[in-house]
Each structure stands twice: as structure tokens, then as C-alpha cells.
Length: 152
Image (cartoon, rainbow, N blue to C red):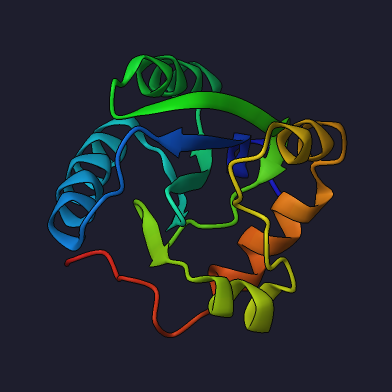
């Protein structure tokens, strides 16, 4: 793999101030895809139980600037970086932003993390100390046929 194929990756979790309905999620997704296309960022956004888990990958300066903007977004709080890494292969290159709405049932069946997105500070601290489950869960969703695809 060439050095130009390597990107900076950041994974974070946050809690929504209010639950997002389907229309609000689709608006957020459209905004993310437009921004990401402009910035050369790809990734995956998972939403469930009032929480977000997102992987962003691309040029480091662009990802860090986008995350700074995300942290200031008034629609959510308790942003916490779970993992970050530089010079890693792009995992979600086919999507400006893949998306999946999670339920507890989906988490239990597909990824084995039934309470992964619970808004509990003890869980958040555990995940910050051990980010591997976040990476495994995101990768488990990468090839799902029910991801909301990028429009052409």
C-alpha cells in the first residue's frame, strides 16, 4: 500500500441532546456527505438509543477540523474520542458517509455489543480505555447490505 493510500482515522461517540427522528437523521446524513465529499473524508455513522458512534477517515487536518466542528454542534454532547490513528488504510472508501440506524436487537445480533451505545459515563470511560470494541463494531457494519448508500 502506498503512503498516499494511508489516512488519519478518528472514532468518537456522543449523546444526542434530543432523539433524532428519521427526517432529522436523513438531513444530518445529507449534510455530512456533502461536507465529506468536499473535504476528502469518508466513514461510517451509527445512531441508536440517542447516541452516535462515528468513524471519520481522510487527511488529518480535514478530519481534525471536522471533529472540532462536530464537538461544537449543539445537537449533541459528551463527545469522546475512542480511538485515533495515523497512516492507516482507508476502510470506508466507498462511502462519503455510510449510515446505519441501530436498535438494541441489531447490536446484540450483529456485533455482540447490546449496550455499546448506552449513555453511561462508566461505559464511556471503559470504551475510552479500550477502543478495540468500537473498531470491531464499526467493521462489523461495513459490509451490511442495509447501510444507507451514498447517492450517485
